Amino acid sequence: MTDRQTHLQNTGKFVAPLGVLIFFAAMALAITMNLWTTLAVVVVLTALLIFGEKRGFVETAYKMVEKNYKITVAVFVAALLLFPIALRGNSYFLHILVIAGIYAMVALGLNFQIGSMGQVNFAPAAMFGIGAYTSAMVSVHYGASPWLGMIAAVIVTAGMGVVFGFPALKTRGFYFSLVTIAVQTIFVLLVVNTDWLGGPNGIPGIPAFSLFGRSLKQTGNLFGMLLPYQINYIYLTFFLLILLIIVARRLYTSRFGLAWNAIEEDEIVAATQGINLTKLKLLSFSIGSVFAGIAGSIYAHYTSFIGTEDFDFNKSLILICMVLLGGMDNPVGVTLGAVLLTVIDEKLRVFADYRMLMYSVILIVVLVVRAQGLLPKRNRTYPGTEEG
Image (tube, rainbow, N blue to C red; front, side):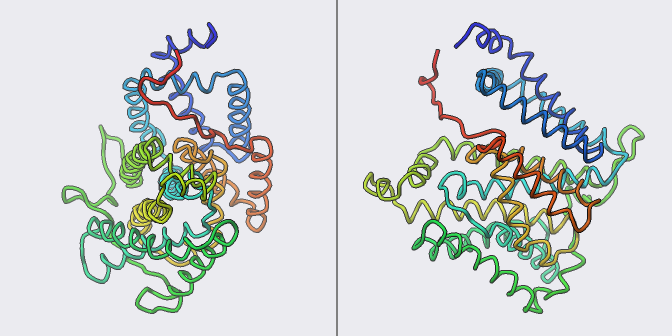
């Protein structure tokens, strides 16, 4: 470690929280300004990451955060609480934040297959939709609490992850991808042709979450400031997102994460080392599906209406792009990729029919410049193994 890196790590008590504030300032610019400002933020961020990684600053930044974890988290939580209030004047900007947090959950779950095991799953939107439809059906048709709907979504998506995971166990490479494409197609056709699931008309009138007897769709008042209901969902979404990031990071450093990476490198060698391929693959599918199920439940009760167009094949492709752009097998990177692409996708709506074309061009350019993603996978470190 160079003297400059050592100095930065020692001053991380101030530098790490400052980095958090700079990140939120950049996100405020990306959300509130026009498309070109948003793209400029992405370009500058990418350039800084490339420069910082070549000079060793990115790894030093990770270590600064780890060394000053408590103060960094405290600043991050405070900024996250105040950020939506600062944007309270525009409900659309707040809506973008809610959707970004929801997509980040799905992308985190998808990362267990694409990032950890190197298997491209083209059906994340299907699991996202299963969670949404399960939670909506429990609440609309049976009058149960949306929280019970979320629990049902977790149980059903976990089971469906195992069910759909079994046929995928027999395949690898692009054959695996073909199986997941079939799963995605089956989900959409099943919903469209089943009246009990709303058919092509979807499910309207989905009730909102309630907390302590107060609906999250109600506006609030803080010191005379009117707070749109979207702020309630921002806090709920990002609270659950932070919990899922913690779970994903723990899994990454656990023996399960190591086994998933071993399967990615060579399944035959992994099996000879005593790794149970069936168990580990099904676990990856099941956990990833649970993440998508939680996100689907929040989405259903936030939008109050769901239809198959919310969970089609195009949505799966966008979710895959979020994982690739953010950085595979890095929960923080995947979250960053999901937030950035959600914001860019919303900004591109002004181009109507050319939106997906421009979206693809932007993604290709970023991936050519930064093939490993904005925040690529890091080497694992454990207590007593850090370099001095």
